[in-house]
Length: 47
Length: 406
Image 1 (cartoon, rainbow over the protein chains, first blue to last red):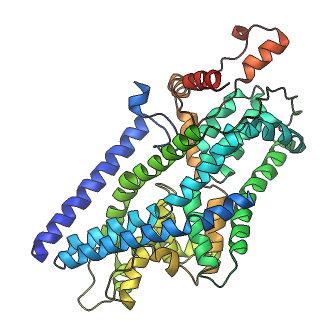
Image 2 (image 1 turned 135 degrees about the vertical axis):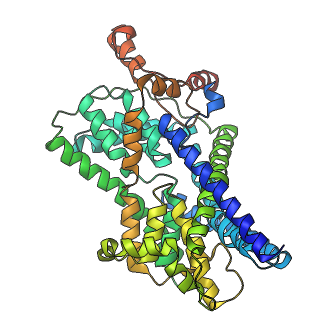
Image 3 (image 1 turned 180 degrees about the vertical axis):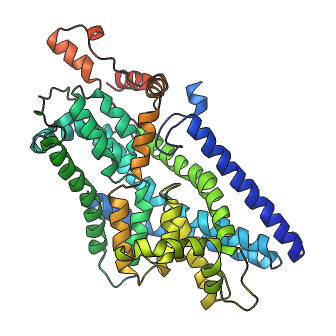
């Protein structure tokens, strides 16, 4: 993989990660909670 | 507690070294098999260094929850609450506040939710306010990193490290009691109510339950490391790698002029009196997303620094080793985390939640949230029907577990 291609791939991964974090933050704002890791029930468990 | 922390340090050492070595080998393998470039750096310096720096603490988390599970399943915790009643009454609270505060050692959120079993609104509010000061499990990796920084290597006896860990926990606990005392004598004055509680019989610990609880916590930790921490590590790598420095610049110069470095420098005047430098500032900013991210940030930041000394990537455990030599800054960071400033956000979030959603959540709360049915005990003792009392929701499968185990 060339250096340029690696740069593009890395930036795509960063963009995807940032988008996922933003979507997660917005979703959490609508439905607040601890964000996991505290023993709170998952969405599946709530259903 | 001393035994617990001693075992955290001694028993976990070998598996931690194994994980450290495995993660370092993975980073080396990626370096060896990929051409030089941004994607390779993202994988090794961002993802592997960030996540590896956190998962290295998995054995210690598992040991902590194994011992907590043992204490819970023997029936010792209820007795501890009873014993603590006298101590709690000195700060104006009663033993009922003990269970929420104890839950806060796992996580402040279930601790705050468990305060609904406290009838007196003032006591409930004081308990909510002090619950975030308890040292939750997410702070354990941060504390361990700080101990590695303050007392590095084999120069210091193991008991000193254990003592520092105990002090960190004690700092949070006594800080919480101090604030409770202050609140109960100023803003939220009131007499501490009497405490009536049911004491379960002592029994042999159910190893299956303990193992399940331990695995559940371990899985949650790993899931967090594989999702939020991975995502933040990737974004943080970008912030530490861009904009690119001119050719020939060292990794330290690159970090200093990157987005993350600029943010750290911007914050530095405000945090300098605490003994923090701009690199710790980057860690503090990122730890607002999740406490453990402080560790992975240090992994990413110091990994960049390590490249100045060695062209090979430093292993993810390098964060633990390379932060040594900054004891003053880490002492301040310890206070920052021990006093749970970040948990204020959690308390606000919990308050914002609408009541039905909170109730629904408590109804299906998993086994690790131990909320005793105080109102049922009260109604049995006083003869006042339960319906006329405030509604208390008990986790459904807690009830079934209680009956099956007794």
